[in-house]
Length: 153
Image 1 (cartoon, rainbow, N blue to C red):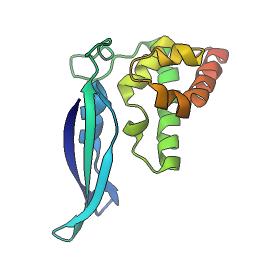
Image 2: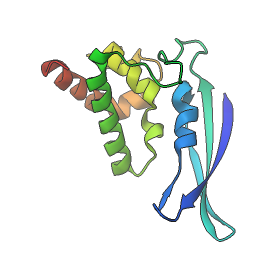
Image 3: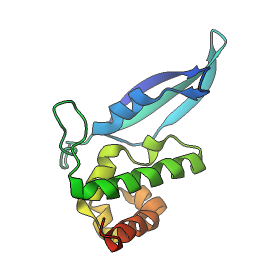
């Protein structure tokens, strides 16, 4: 296990913390948790994130294929399901008041879209989907996958 610390500053124009760096970092790593602390630095709201993680390639398949520019390569036939999973993740994260990358990163969603698991057991075999994620999200993910299969996507 490794640990990465991020310091995010509040953007006064948007009212959000810019977490693109965190999202990019977690594309190829499995977050084991995220611990946060809010504080003021020079009078500005600041968020510190401590992220214990492991590299995805250790003891499991490496992350999803990537284009030369580093972007995920998602086959055309998997793109609609991937986008549906991303939409679900972002909405669920908002509902839970958590950053989206805590639920699943894009690489994990791409792996789910490629595998198209139909059971909890099969979903649990997808890299990055452990017991906690199965417990918390399996029913919702399997419903999204079933809906995509039924609609031909």
